[in-house]
Image (cartoon, rainbow, N blue to C red; front, side, top):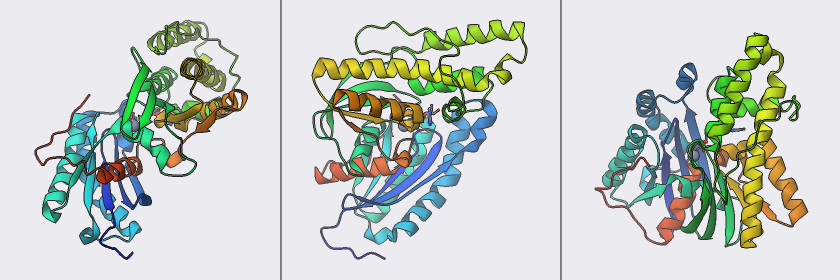
Length: 337
Ligand code: KG4
Ligand code: ZN
């Protein structure tokens, strides 16, 4: 077990907003463990089934916390706070994490820290070096959100633009579903795109003003295009899967890149970061770094394991909340949106 001094800040963090049950331990700002149990069951249904997600969280949460504590070499008596995702997310899923966190905090008589999921995605940038300096822009792209935020301090920021319909992750997952791929389709599109020609099928770009995004039109055009082609050749998708994935990915990335470039131009900020599950996309990681080289940006992307949902990012955010002594009352309730 690692030694604990009076001034140590040791936090157990829990993330359960969607379909990953995750726990992490952080000591004085350094991540000691980061564990995730993913729920394969949703693959069968083509998307996350909230009822099943809550049940799986109930089954997974104790073992995941146990492994996270063991790997960190931390005992319950060494913890100084318990953190949890307060929202946004699936309410049943959030309830499992928040109830668990609350019970543990009460039984150990230590503070409870509630964390906003999207803030945590952004604060994942402070886990490892190099870290962005304020103010920085963060393109936050996940299954539920797509936004460009101007961060001025750890917990203060301004949303400069956001999606008016689907999130970027949804655009990946829904396109994948049209192509007959299982949920979550984003990583599969990424995989097949590597062998395909991104110019094979030029899908139209959304025309949305300012720094907002829109992906629903793109999804519809992909759907109509596939329906038309399949009538002519029933094997069209199988025969062209790599090219289709590469073309879909190109269309999504082009829209994202256009907006982050515009945001940098409009604000004059060249500290540019990428966060959220879609930041795991290899094409997007490459594109933002390449664009950054041309435009003299300092570009930041968290390590792969801190991009998709994880508890290390909750732990990192909780560490800064602890420094501010910003705690949650015991009658707190999670929120869905
Ligand atoms: O942040 P996240 O793990 O969960 C939410 O907060 O929503 O993001 C999940 C989203 C899913 O839509 C998933 O398909 C997408 O991130 N995703 C990817 C990749 N890895 C995860 N999308 C494209 N390429 C990837 N490699
Ligand atoms: Zn997320």
